[in-house]
Length: 25
Image (cartoon, rainbow, N blue to C red; front, side):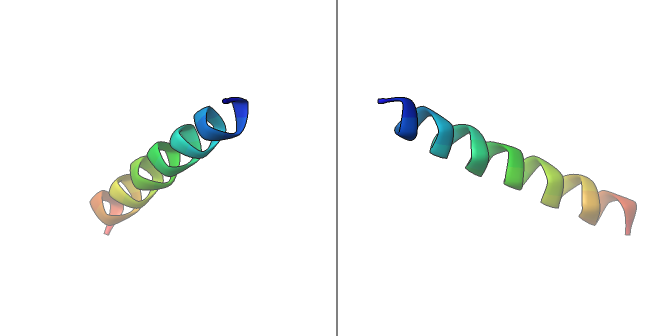
């Protein structure tokens, strides 16, 4: 359960960083 939550948060964080990176470009 904890691993699943960590994975979901990691994916969401990764998408957020990618979106912010593209916004900076």
